[in-house]
Length: 372
Image (tube, rainbow, N blue to C red; front, side):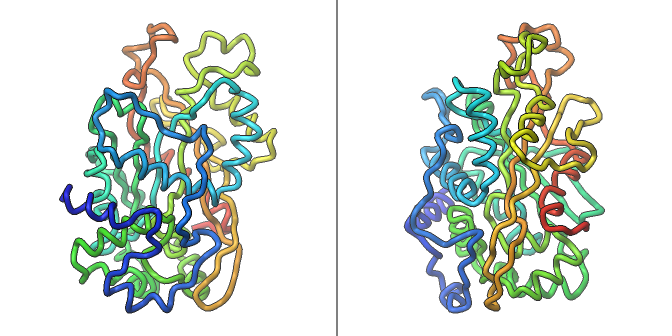
C-alpha cells in the first residue's frame, strides 16, 4: 500500500488538474470549476508563518511536508479570515514568532464505499501517520457523523506535524433523496479499482477540490435542508475544512499583561479578545471557548468564510467555505509542577473531545445560515 500511495502522489503533482483515469474522462465534460476551490496548476503562495519545519532527526517521508504545505496553500488562498488572523492578531501580537504551530488539520468526507475516513487513511499512512484508536470511537449521533484522527508515528515529529482529524457522514442514515444525491456524486468509488480511487482522492486533496463534478444548486439546497455537513462536502470535497493553530506552542503575548508572564503559553481567552477586536465573528456555540470535561482542552473558532461557488447548473451563490480554529492544550495533572520553560507537547492533554468538536462543526453551519 505504501508503494501504491507513493506512486499516486507522484502522479498527482502540482501540475495535475484532474487524474486522467477512465472514470473522470467519461465525466469531465460535466465539471464546472468553482471559485471556492479552483482547479489550478499553480500552487498558491503559503504565508511564511504557516510553514512546517522539521529538524533533521525527524524520521518522516520526504513527501510529507510538501504534501501538507500544498494542502495548506490551497486552503489559505480561499480563507480570507485566515489572512485577517495573521495580519491583525498574530503578526502584531507575536512579532518574533516565525512559525505558527498547527495543532491539527480537519477534513470532511462522505461515508460511502471507497471513500470516507478509509480513503484518507490510505493517503496518510505512507506519509508517516498512524491512526489513533479512541475507546469509544468518536461519534456524533445527532449529526450522523463518525470521526477518527491520525498522528505522526515518529515521536520527534509528533509535536511539529499537525494531527489530522477526519470525519465522515453516515450516508445510510440520511433520507433516500439525500442518499441518492450523494451516491450520484460519489458512488463511482464503490466499483472503481482501489488504485484509481487513491489517485482521485490524492488529486482532490492536493488541489483542494472534489473528485466529482460540481453539484447542481438544487441538490446542494436539498442536502442543506437535511445536513449542512453533507452539503459542504458535496461542494468542497477533499479541500481542507480548517487548520487549528496551536496556541500552546505560542509564548504569552506581551499585551496579555504581567499576570500571564509566568504562563507556559498564549491564553485562548485573551487570543479570542484579539480576534474580536480585529472584527472577526467567533463561533458562539457552547460559549466562545469550548472546554472539555477535564478542562484541559480549550478550543475556539471563527465563523467560516462565505465565498462564491459556481454550481454545475450555471448558478453562482455565496456558500460556507473554510474557517480557522484555535486550540490550547493544558498540562496533564502529573506535570502541573513543571516550570513553564520545560513544558513540552508530551506533557499536555492529547486527543479530541466529542463535545468540543460537535460545537466546532457549527462554524460552517453558522456561515451557511443553517441549523442542522
